[in-house]
Length: 174
Image: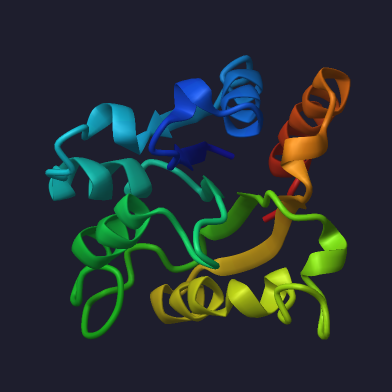
């Protein structure tokens, strides 16, 4: 199973957890694709991106939760890469049967992502647009890998989460 990890963090060098996750993932036989590094000008090569998707069976979107959503480049990537006639609609079946997995880091503790909590919504509710996208493009949506309270994690906890992340991603069955 070929896995593509699309890392979307606008400042990965200053990240703690997303940087650790990407570095740990790079130790394995996967393609780690750092969007902000490849496209610092945010001008996407749609054909290259579509070719990457075609060459992999499992697609992972790895990102920090920003304003209850994805970083802006991932939204732009979806708008430009997942086109009608290619990813959905008439003739748009290129991604059918592939897996889509979200790897998400959130600054707030898990208790803030519950009904009645600080944010009022669960992570699952906040990720509904990505799950709907998965349905539209014909991928199988895998339960997201999430880590909460990332600002409060020790170095050991960050490393442990990176190891759990790799095991979670690589051990999903088609």
